[in-house]
Image 1 (cartoon, rainbow, N blue to C red):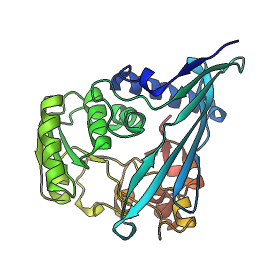
Image 2 (cartoon, rainbow, N blue to C red):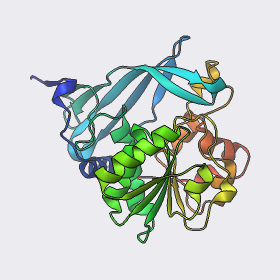
Image 3 (cartoon, helix red, strand yellow):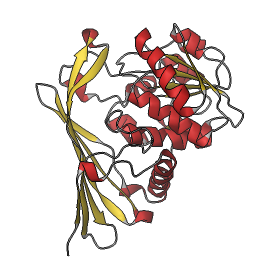
Length: 302
């Protein structure tokens, strides 16, 4: 039996954010009902910093199971406080029929959000996962956002939020570059038809908002959790990646969110608890190690 081979140029401009959120939600819900259909990401690194990421899993409701793999060259900046990707290769997805095992398709490349086009690799999938969390966790009366970051991940995260919370009307954006945050505010306020204001500090972005979106390339915590106000929702996207420490690229696990934020949170949700342990994801693993929270306190997204 033949299979479908799709190349990067053949998979672009097909999916909107709402459709991506719906598909990702089916994946997590199905994984909750039948946990062994998914497993945590596994990563390896070369001495030069080339990283291979492998993702096994499936969505039985859609009739697919398989794996994805991706290579990128990770470069540490500012004495390890931030990182960038000197090179990112097209990911490869292999899809099999979840009933018969037959090969259905090999997909080269990563789809992007139809209205945004290419911004950064895996930004659509990352934001769609956040979108499931936004759908069920962000207060229905939320109107304001503090956005930390001003690149492709930030644009996708904001689009995911307003896709499920269209009542959002005002955004305060902060990033280290004044030029970048001003450009982001000009471009996306027009594109999303909402008010976006560039602000001068993290504290300005956090104060008085309903939702805080962390979408940065940081390796260290962004803000003091004592700055947070009751009722705020916080989403972070850092996965930890302890292999960076074990390979000598970083002195400590990547963090975005500090211990105080985790301590103060009424509800903590992650994609897979198993990933918190297997990757020693700093935002949650380190508070667990310090006895500030228990693994059992963390809810899985599914």
